[in-house]
Amino acid sequence: MDIQGKICLITGATSGIGKETAKVLAAKGAIVVLPIRDSLKGDILKDEILEQTPDAKIELMHCNLASFDSIRSFVKEFKSKHDKLHLLVNNAGIWETKRNLSEDGVEMNFAVNHLASFLLTHLLLDTIKKSAPARIINVSSEAHRNGKINFADLEFEKSFSSFKSYSQSKLANILFTKKLSQQLKDTGVTVNCLHPGVVSTGLFEKMPGLFTTVMKPFMLTPTKGAETSIYLATSPEVEKITGEYFVKKKPKKPATVALRQDVANKLWEVSEKYVGL
Image (cartoon, rainbow, N blue to C red; front, side, top):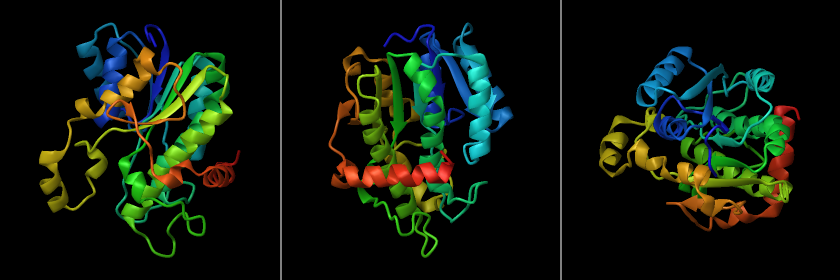
């Protein structure tokens, strides 16, 4: 997709692969809209992009992805300024090592990694459809292979495991992608997801120091980690591909549970209730 002059929205762009994705898309001439929770970080990011691409078109809008009300306010502001959205990259992700709650009282990994993108995408879907051909990209992880959608205790209230919680949220990203791609059939909107690799980003900042020390030499740079996101956003090769999971720019079969229609359907229904759709 030629994104010159196209409106692109990227979450989680103040660091890591989101920042690298924003830089590249801005350099390619896209109008890049960035939902930002921390205005200072947003200003620093904008200055950094403009230094690299002086004529870049960057718009910062406030949004706290750990708040359903904030997501709704952001979408209202976005729609007051734009009637098109050609690319949505649900890139934001966290990995909480302790059981923390969002502003809505939902376990944080599930709230930010799954429910935030679920709600944001739904609220923007009418605009995205009007902009077809358009693309939606969800950043997942190979960690999904260790995940299970625990409908009896989605928020790990009984026994919290940060790895299980994170893995569940990344599995949810793929189930959401698969189900959404079915709903968007014949609309001109594609939706795919990806594993960026194990990337040296702020995702691991709450991990024990020993973990990051041992893993750091094996981690990809954010620039390398952003390659598959950028490929899915811009490549003509994936123009007609939808509902797939990509690793290193190639489709890869996810875990068997990620392909289960019954799990996808139930997660969808539960997610709608959570976000009040």
